Image (cartoon, rainbow, N blue to C red):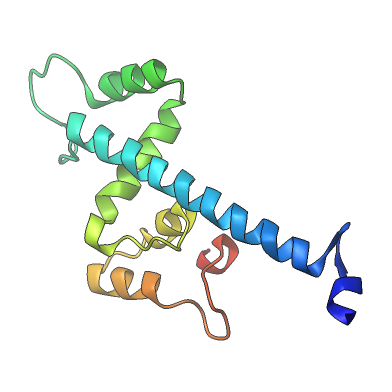
Length: 134
């Protein structure tokens, strides 16, 4: 009975836990959506060495600007999604880890270290948070 009298903000502990479960599903859906955007942007414009393809009809920036405009996002959002997807092959993406955490941990240069890090939350934690990843 004590659990029902405890509150988190304006809701009971049990309602809070329901909200967290629901929002974790939403975050998972958003992460999947962001990876899909990144994957498709990579399909349209794979990462290349600086300078791109000489005499290309479209620059990478022009292509990504067009894509961003056509789907109603900013160029920066599409570029970040593309880069993050490039750092996380599908088999190394963690369903219960947000896209934001994948983006932050994507900065780890060594692939093996990066792939191990995303599977291992910080000591004393059961899951990654964006703040912990930073």
